[in-house]
Image (cartoon, rainbow, N blue to C red; front, top):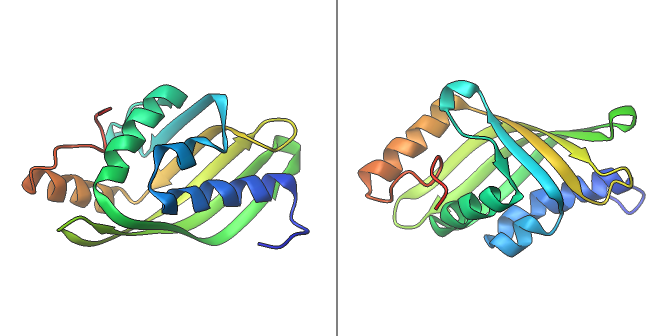
Length: 149
């Protein structure tokens, strides 16, 4: 993204880029103190997470990847709702378990000044998510996707 991008777009890009660091600290940096994260579809049974439980969840998830990237395909800004919507591909390499990919659409609601994310609503490919859960369970990694570790 360019230097002329809005603060909201810059913050959304910071969120996407933070995933590549594979550290909880990087993931938390662009998030507001009262941050909420929700994954859909609800059939996946992922609980809503506040910032603290998102950090615990992120710790487990980052531990299973040797590399990870959120690659945006489309990004839209709704200034009236202080929200950025991203369609992205998630690409990663699991420790000792090979390549993994998924797709998502993320709604990122920002603070009024656009500098932090207060809420993400993430829609993921449920089939690919279930396949990852099964792969992790078979590899004795546990279910770090659902459990706060």
